[in-house]
Structure formats: structure tokens, C-alpha cells
Image (cartoon, rainbow, N blue to C red; front, side):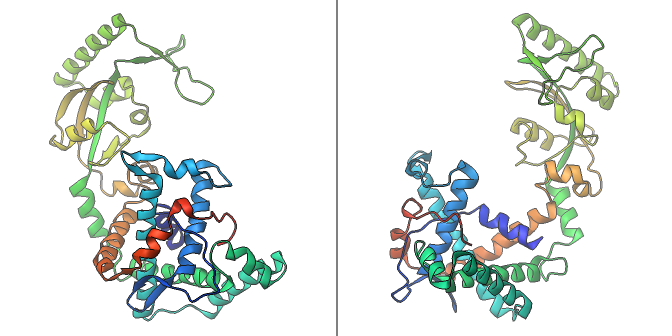
Length: 368
């Protein structure tokens, strides 16, 4: 679990850098207390993450200048944004490696040997150590840089497990999970009637699906929109008259997720699988209360329900509505809080940071 957490953390931050010769003494790129990420390690890591980013998100196996000059918002390029995120990532690495020593943690002989064996396998694959050093020099690194990076990754995993693992000193308790769950989430069911499309049905009233499994739709005419509005008004009258809301949801909602999840939706202010106006409406309702909502997409009859105990532990709901794991979410928040507390102590070489940007980095697709 720690490996997955660290991988996700790094993927969320990504990369930069350029080529540096290892023949001269390495400058300190990032320093936290007694821990130093030197220029060569910085260059190597950022080159690798640049390659991973190009491949994972663009399907590219070579550099493309247009990627880095494109803007993600007015005046902010992909290069600007990811350079800042990468710097944050490397600062975090320095902090964790330092905490590894301060907490008195250690790697086992077997763990260290596994790193050395993996590097020996790489050396054998390319022919000899000199050839591997030559290949790595393109990214400003050598075999010793590669070894340091791999050992540091193990150290980071050890620190995260020590802090946030199952028996970690700063792990999330069930009481804390429940407190966060109750304070931030609301459970809702709603009847949604689209004002733009309708579902196709066969002669038996069953939905007709496309080859991809999605229900076929057709665009509504003005007359059909008016009829849908009238039908929705009738549904609202039935709800107000006390008709069973769950049954009406099951029979009439056009929201495919609402058709699937028996509990309805667990939503918070940051939920993205429903319209933000829906989550805002749920937040303003008392348990058992209903409300009508109209958006550009359609009409909603929304009801708020009492939370189900430990609803965040239901596997299907956790994946769809709790970011995969509510525990992981809270741990991630704690990680960020701890890193932020240390960030003012981190010293960076601003000249190196301005010299090595994502746009100028040689992407590394092969070595890590």
C-alpha cells in the first residue's frame, strides 16, 4: 500500500531538468537539514519523470516542444506549472529522506542487496558499467546516482509506513474517519429528468444499449421538453403527497449512477460525479427533506438521507465516491500538512531551478 501511495504522490507532482556532466563536483540543488539532493540526482529524476509524463499522458516516446509551451491557463504554460510541482515533489523527497535518519529507521541487508542486484542486471544488459554510465550521463547521472535514487525510494516508503501504515504512529483511526465522514458527507437520492435527451426503449420498455454498453438516447424536441416538464411537475406532486421516494427514484430517474447504487450517492462539496448545484442543495437539506432543482441539463427532485454507518468502507462506493479510500484521502492530507510544516526549512538553489526547466530536460524513458 505504501508503494502505491508513493507512486500516486509522485505522479501527482511530476518532473523537469536538463543534462549535466558528472565530471565536476555536484552542486546542492535542494537541502533539508543534513539531507542533500544534488544536481545530478535532481537532473536524473526530473528527466525520468518527464519521460513518464510524455508517455503516460501524451502517448509519446520522444520529446515534443509544443507540449511544454501550451497554456493550461492564461499566461501559465505546462512547463511553468509542472516545474513548480516538480520542485515541490523534490522538496518532499528531501524531507522524507532526512526523517528516515531522524526516526532511526534502516534498510535491511536484503533490501539493499535487491537494489544492487537490480543495478547489476542493468549493467549486464547494456554490457558493462562504463556503458551504463554513458547512457545515464545523457540525463546528468551515473550508476551511483541511480543507486541513490532507488535507495531513497525505499527510505521514503519506510518513513510513510512508520508514520501512516497500519501500525503507524500517525495513522488514521476509525474515530477520526467517522468524524470526517459525518462532518463532510451527505447521502442523497434524486429523481433526475433530462431536458435535452431521452432514453431509447424497446417494445417491452427495456433500455436499448449501444455496443459500448451505454443507453441509446435521442435529442428532445421542444414539444418533448414541455412534456418532460409536465411529467416532472406530476412527480413532484406525488412526492409531496407522500408517495415512496425510493420507488419513484428506482422507476423514473434518468441518472445512470443513481440506477446503479442502492444507497444513492455519498457527496461532499468537492464531489465531481454530480453537478455542483446538486451537492450544494444536499448540503442545505435536513435529513428526510426534499428539494426541487432545475439546471441547464434537467430537473431534479433531491432528498437527503441519513448516512449509513461506515458507508465509506463499501468497496463499490469507496471507489466511486471516496477517492478509492477515505483513509487514504485523510492520510494524504496529513502527509501534506506535515510536509508543509517543514517546507520553510528547505533550501533550494534558485540558479539551478531557473537553469533546469521541464522544457529543456532530456526525457528519460528507460532508467529508474
